[in-house]
Length: 247
Length: 241
Image 1 (cartoon, chains in turn purple, orange):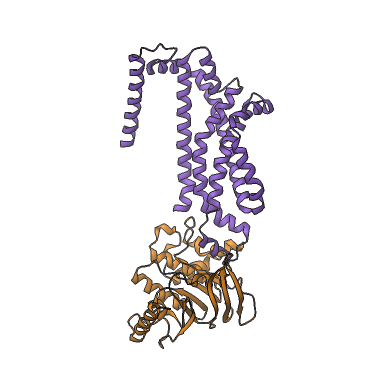
Image 2 (spheres, one colour; image 1 turned 180 degrees about the vertical axis):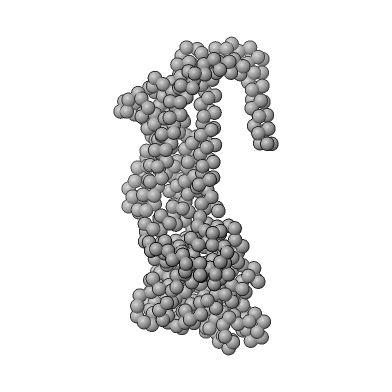
């Protein structure tokens, strides 16, 4: 309850500050609309925003799912093989030196203006954090557990599956929590570069037509979706991944 | 369980240019508990890990042989510092971990029997975090018994327990591991005096044999001879090498 009160109070405070800024600086609505006006637009355009939000949500969720699976498998692959680590890790680090933003136009060229170029962006942006967090955890299995398992006669595959992977699940979980926040950024970048649907597209469109209230309405919906996604992933991680190792 | 062999380690070890222990010869009598006592950092654990075949860093020059001439892997069980239970498995899962790791079917009836032997029959479905330190250690013992190996390696398994629980675990362990070839690495003179059929002190200069008390293992905590042996061991440990 006290947590809800804290959240409500800080939200109210933010709204008051926002309205105070608009009123005191006498900003016109096409520069910065007040919260009341944004709320009004949000309600009036709810069908439009909901339509675009659904598209973005789908891109984010598919990207998150695919990126997590791919990242998880990559981490296990890297942790299993010394050769893979030597050959592939430098490539992965190099790929991180390329800003994902710069890839968006190429992805749109390759995958088209539809859903998949945005899914690919979301996937790309979360792949490294997920892989990296899980891989690091896989490489940090308590050495005593490994000794025990070896004396018990475990081969490498079973050592991985029964000891290293379960022991590393909390690391995987922290990668997923980051991914839940990054994935929407990827999808929005994709939509900015080329799209006819989605919240990113809507924000760009609204901005271009000086409908700043609509832009803010879409932005707030995006932020709320991201928070919900993060909360959902966090809950899932607590339920299934963290508990595996801490009890 | 097959008839336990005796075990001999002979040689020296180093990591890079740094010697871990000098040339020494350690014999583990068949079916007996051999305690290896020594201060921290003299290579007791390294010696145990070399026998276990899990040390990949230390360069060991010498031989580790069993009296029956058969290879060691697959004939040893390890109980290391702390309980080393997997927190994501319940008690029964931990006791049957070995079968899982070898891809063999798990004998749950036998696992329950082992748990009953260590007095944990009612705790089979609990997760380790729901157990006390002593209970966790008993699960680890049940797991070791479940492995049913002729050679058992104990690496300071009870160092984190309180005095009362430690004494209980020593009794339980000595009783249940009777008849196996056991190497127990410890830094506790009291533990060595209670548990060892044979006691060796490992120091920077080498291995030293100490005559153990005559009473059968596990010796009573208040047995005068055992207490005297404990005192001698501590005095020897404190003496400059």
